[in-house]
Length: 212
Image 1: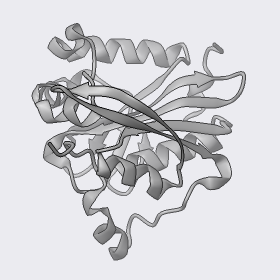
Image 2: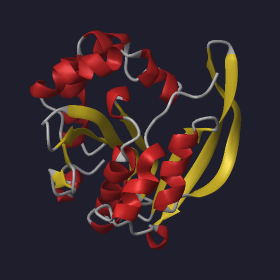
Image 3: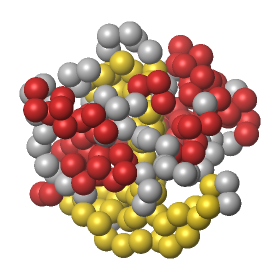
């Protein structure tokens, strides 16, 4: 742990449609709504946070800010520019400063904002910060094999499939594999988020409940 390393990331990160920043008290009502929607956790394949944080999102805000100060993890709120609402989260979990790698790019979007490409947009800009500002060499991530939308996000960004964790997650008695991905600095695919072609391609980019 090297105190202050994460200060190199330029926050907030501003994208064409989003503001990506540290969580704050004002996010709590929006986060609570997201936590209460069962589709959110189902898409990820696990509870989003501890029971305490699910009941009181302010506890999550406090924890993630502490992790940021200790340069352990970077967990950020995804805020829609137009409305100012917190519509999800994106983060870099498990920052290894010795080998300059990230154990997991994580992201989820409130179900009310699915199918608009927000997950891809937020993840692209955060990965770029990780490589350019933090000097990371590698970013790993994972997605449920039945979450076609999440798999699409990672592949569109240039992530390469590296393996599979079989029967990694069981939801309502159904077990699913977790597909493992990795991304190196020179593999990031540039995306033009403002082009009409991108808008058409992004219709299925966000978290989607795995089919039953």
